[in-house]
Image (cartoon, rainbow, N blue to C red; front, side):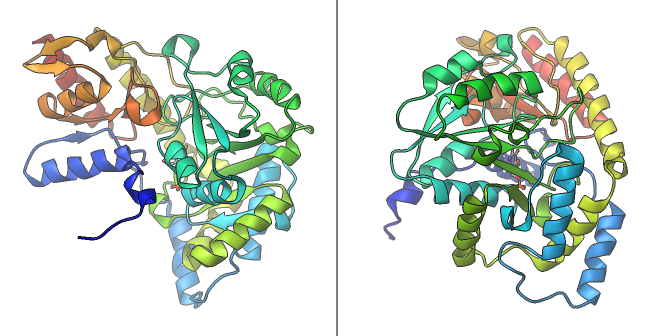
Length: 395
Ligand code: PLP
């Protein structure tokens, strides 16, 4: 019997990964589960990126890299930030990490002291709250609803700020809601932050390219915010490279230096082969990955059309990423096929057991009225999943 730390004992398991594990387990038992729980593109990494990795192996890239990333990769990131976001960073402001998840963990660990508050508009990406807590910060949830397109208003932000507020973290396009903050909406939030100059913002832009409404905006674009924003990005989603584990930040130099110091003691830097491959990925024009974005767009239409036919699902059309986040509170308090549905976790389990469709409870994202569907799945799987759910609910 080991006495594990309070730190790990108080941490929740990632519910998206837990659902993925449960799905694998049920599949291994021979159950025909359709997995719509995982935030992972169902495409292969494009060949031109794989070839760059093979070349890197053959060229004997096998040593430790600089802790904050190869200079050539940092330069590719600097060019990407300029090309796609009109953001100017120099090498001292870039840190490459083992996925955007590690970038976020670095930032939390270097910025937060015990009791510092971090504002998280709900729904937020599942790991934000746990990462903040790991760094002994306090997540402050700001609820939003399907009726307001899951967007935090300036007034809500103002009301959430206290003398202990250290940071604001959000993703746009958002996982799990798919909503995208427009430049005007970000400016309105920045106007509130202008009155509180010590608050630092984490702008998680990992779904930047998977945007169906256009006009991706970064908080760091505003001159008065530039020195207060950590822009987080990575290649997992748009480049179908989840397993390669590369993410990065553009940040004020002091924060970047601190993240470099942190990962110097924890990982010594990201994988060398993956870093070489990501140089090629980022240098390629966005048109080279457009075929995946187009497929996500047509699947979004498919899943929205089919879900709209299911009574009780309240949906707002997602503008980016590859998720739909319906409000399913209509089912709470009902008993369906012998399952008592008290909350979204019960509803998600009901769908798994009775429709054999894996989703994720909104509880994991701070929005307990909703559940998340990932449509990074084939058209046939989406059609079959919606058919099964409709049937399970109609009986
Ligand atoms: N940020 C958001 C909003 C995400 O959805 C994810 C992955 O699901 C990440 C960060 C982490 O990405 P990575 O695979 O680069 O660690």
